[in-house]
Image (cartoon, rainbow, N blue to C red; front, side, top):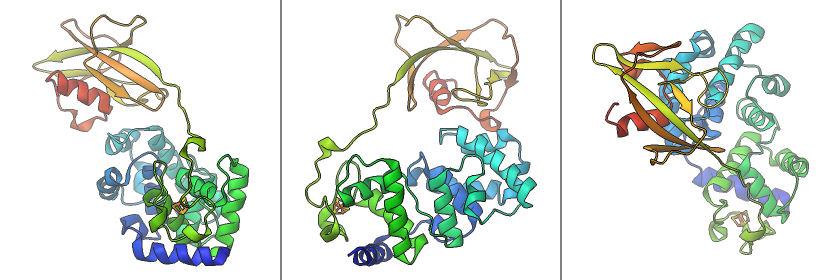
Length: 318
Ligand code: SF4
């Protein structure tokens, strides 16, 4: 039964899988960048950014040699900037420890900063034909539905994923097909069982009870930030680089003061992060700025958080 399911899924993927640029290459550098970019970013958003990335950083050595600021600028707007810092560290490690060649062993891939078991599985299978499963959110959901185990723990899911890929005969296509099924037909909001290639072999087909599927509830904390905007007609806007850890780490912003009390006025812009809702209140200041920072005439050379871009737009200062 399982091999039938494998064939049905692989056939469906061969016919219906989206033609995406990272599916046309086996270059581990390009696959790696796509995997990191797609972790928290939708395909439609990632696509143009993925292509532009290689114009700026054509290979691992150019990535490792670039200043972190350049990477952050190239990543601007994609969010979750921690990914970029870890990519930079990983690129330097590849240059130092692997002579600039992306490692081909699963353990060595997983030892790189920012690469977990699932991402390592994707790279090893797509580039080196290893039987290493992907277990991202989409694949977990599909496996749970197939097996009718809505509350299965990760350990069990890894075993199921490994068993499936071992039987597939084509680990690269298998992982892509599982991810594609979860992204296109068997989604969190709905399951198109009618169009699904494995409907006859799935424990949940046409009978998903969405109310029993566990959903991740993320507690959100509200922050109220006053953004001190110093503008000089001659010198531009005063920016500071934020610390290397925490929210918007290493990005450039006007000076920010965290308010302890919620202001009476409404925020000009609210920026939503996974665990935080940042209420931004601009304060135009005539006073001379103090502390570390610099006057910036053109923002193009600096990586600013999307929330600050939006705030400046709303205050006609962009
Ligand atoms: S039959 Fe339905 S629930 Fe099962 S994998 Fe296909 S889309 Fe998902």
